[in-house]
Image (cartoon, rainbow, N blue to C red; front, side):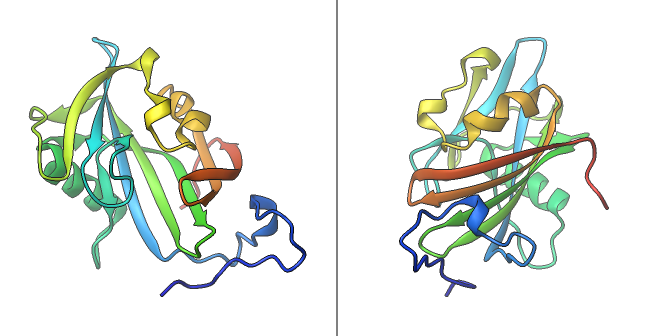
Amino acid sequence: MYNFSIKRYDGGMISCDTIDWNSWTPDERAVIVYITDRKRGKVLLINKKRGLGKGKVSAPGGRLEKGETYLQAVIRECEEEVSITPESLQKRVELHFQFTSGFSMYGEAFFTDSWKGSPIESDEADPFWCDLDKLPFDKMWADDRYWLSQAIAGQKFRGFFVFDDDTLVSQNLITIDNFSA
């Protein structure tokens, strides 16, 4: 089912340092989009109602469909989940997630201050506007607290994370100027 299983025969803790990220291949690819209303000091978040992260606070996003680009996926997912069409998207974060179960996912996080439409609840997500200075990190994935605020401010990252189920066991963030083509 998964491309490999992480095993440590020396009894040590699995960490970002024990994974060869150069040969790592994710099982799935995904996107997430953060829409900010700078005039009001808000960001659009969702209460995730199903799938990976059910019950957590996140942002609109999801898995790529066959033949879809990351930009196409982020627009489709945002329209499906909250009935908003994001515009002028900027990629700011590349996310590499490895779970101790063997599951792995690569994601790209996009940001924008421009959109069409008004957020509407769907069977996947209950959207709400959150104050930028009051992000509910205690209800979000544990990695978000290490990069989200800085990415909203414009910083770009490559993030590498190891999770044991819902628990973050290792993380490594690399600040970058630009993403290579």
